[in-house]
Length: 242
Image 1 (cartoon, rainbow, N blue to C red):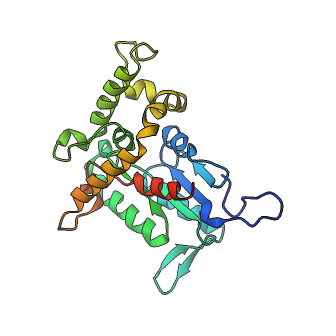
Image 2 (cartoon, rainbow, N blue to C red; image 1 turned 90 degrees about the vertical axis):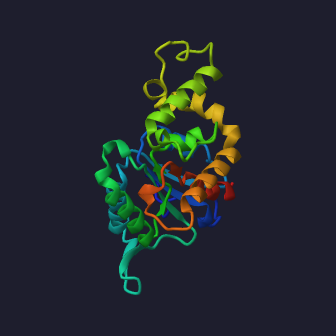
């Protein structure tokens, strides 16, 4: 991974650290491919995929920065905090992964808390990243418990893409389903991304709506925000730097 302190520029122009993003992704295909679409000449992105589930990912990020001497103990806060170039943003992208068992609620919540204490921004999804993709196409009913699990997102994306590309392979296969056919970089960029890219503003609005509905009047832990995604927070930051 190209670290922010290693990024070079042409001639003698000083690096504008406000345009540097270091993004760690749980997934190794879809998430990195998606965030790479934001790259441009004025933005510097370092994206790493296959960085494991929530608590393991935060530990990995912390250790990498610790070894670089950029995670140091802050006596005023009583925790280790990132000390990267001013304006550089470090983000962790991971899912709730409900299918792995509800006994991981504490691990999910603690990962978010620890990351924020250390200065690591979080773009989590509950239940998974495909919720963010689905919000580009339609609203999600917060009261429908089927949307508490990724299975529903895959079902809806299967139907949406089959209708979008009725004459194209692999959609003409009667056994086509999103999970089996579309969870790879090439198909994502060729079909899913091309279908969703013009609906970014709608997805942001829908994600904000879901988040607001969960917030309500009483605080609750992150694992209870379901269905919900905070990927739009990272997207909004990327848009600002475009």
